[in-house]
Length: 305
Image (cartoon, rainbow, N blue to C red):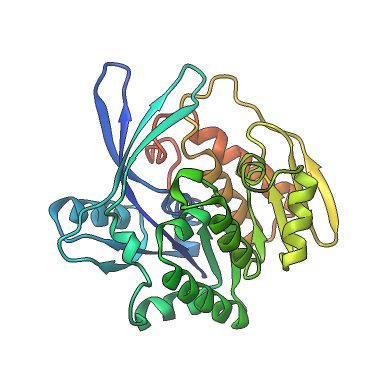
């Protein structure tokens, strides 16, 4: 059995519906990937989600939602805290606008204190560890240093580290702070899954420049997503391009990149080639964006046996 760990935040997701109502769910970039990785892997993969939660009723609902997806949850509980939330609005093309309420998110206290041996062991013993730039933006400088130390330990033990920069400018105090944190993340990354839009916003340049940047930092596998466009990848000493897979009528692109990452990582962990893994990522994302919300119903994308 493959042991995978995703690290980050799960929020309350409020999605505007056609009739003017809102749909309540739970979502967050690394959480979304964890959910889809478990659905795709079924009993063949153990997926643990490392996060921080509050202790109120909504936090209890949040934990129940995580576990209902088959995730093992390792949560740092912050007394008196409540989950962060965000509101999603989508236009006619499925492109989304977010409004966040996360200043007091319990995840801001993750890894920021005495070492939690339970969380450290969970990460260090995994076969695959996944985190993102959002994970980094939500935690303190001290917590980032602690996280990078744990990731280095996991890597030394043979674990593979996967990272999506997922850069969101408004979540950082400055672009320079973000670049410094991302640079450290690159140095502990084996599999890089950035999007061209995010990388251009922070660094500029082309998809080939993105690959060069991650390769120089030590990544052995780089996959650059570009929406519905072609995917440029580098692995096993060669570069390749996989044609895009546009969807005629996307409804909500909120979880597109996250679900792509799950499809890609699942396929690669089961021996697929890079090109086949990219196509699996495109397939999963293509299903997800035809429904509203980051996490689609299980009838749409069910758990594997």
